[in-house]
Image (cartoon, rainbow, N blue to C red; front, side):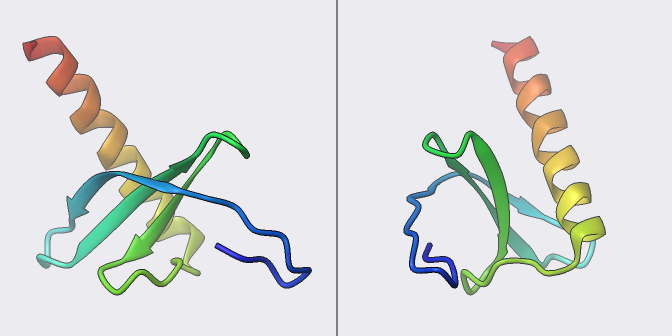
Length: 70
């Protein structure tokens, strides 16, 4: 990902999440920034912060459930 001031950051996709309408989203993490981002199924960064937070919450909940069953 490149910012408007030409800084480049690498993100690794760490999970895929679908909403109730079967729309796909990718959750990506940057070690460099220690942050998660959410993109749509075409790789475009979500601009709707509320939706992005909802997707992240779902992702973290699924990850936690997965750890509990391991």
